[in-house]
Length: 138
Image (cartoon, rainbow, N blue to C red; front, side):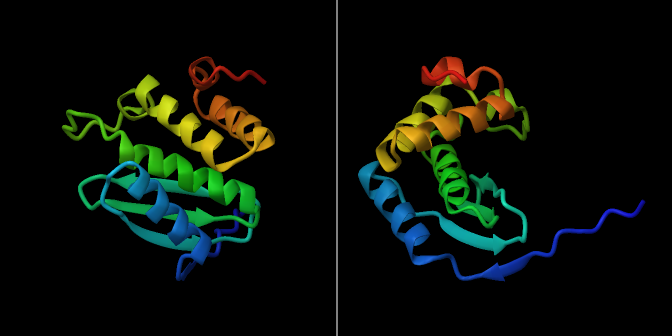
């Protein structure tokens, strides 16, 4: 059975995303990273942060709540770059207590309780220790 590849389309980031990035960075005294925005047909979004480039990449699905959560997740990376980056791709280097504390701070600041609960469930799926750091459980 052949798997169909996801169709991606590069687009200008939506205004809400640009404003969110600018406000979060202003609140934390950080430079605004560049934001690449791609879209896909599926519901869920994904993202990546490149610290050397100061760049966030979001592949946005169709669910606006999921888009916002992924963008906030990547902004948490921007705000908590590990002190020693030596080419390690280890999730533990990037997804540690410091990161999750900042991520859930952003989720709570920019979303309601339902949004935070959704992100807790998503992060728990992504990495088991996130819910113990956030204080939320499934």
